[in-house]
Image (cartoon, rainbow, N blue to C red; front, side, top):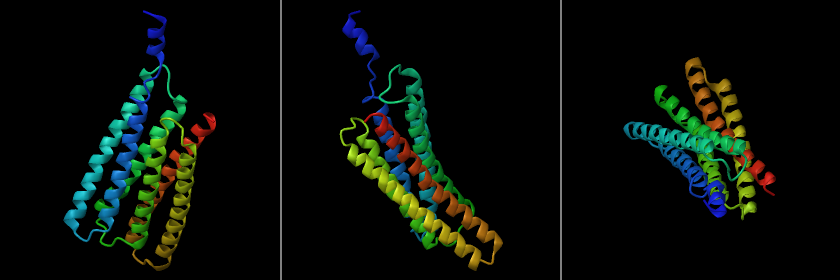
Length: 216
């Protein structure tokens, strides 16, 4: 085997492996968030339940992509950036998907009869964060547009801050005005799951900012 052949063997095929998988995982999260927004704004119960089932299927797809990233991480001797960062980013993207699905499942299982403005707003913020996450992930493959990645991370942080405010205000209103204890618990759990999804977007943004620093 020639020296060049040996070198080529160890060069990471990242453009064929890691980055396409990251992009697919981020795209999948955007798809889930889009369906979530449609579901909480739908007035048809049957249609809404079908959307929740679609979110379940998309979450399963996300699990498969995350598992594939972990497998490739174990198989590749050289990686495009730190192995810990690859693992952390894959996990953070998967966590966004998990909390979107968790929110949808709670809405369906708790038989929520009213989708409040706070639920709708948090769902929209999840979508905004997911879109920015997808934009940043797409730029990771060559790190030529570092400013674009940084800007998306800043916008994700802003989304998370807005979600914190919406969540805190919504929970405060529940304790002030909701007299039905069971209903209060249901809505608080749903709101918490939605807000946590934006936290996971921020976690992914933090990983990407770490990657930028290490590759500066």
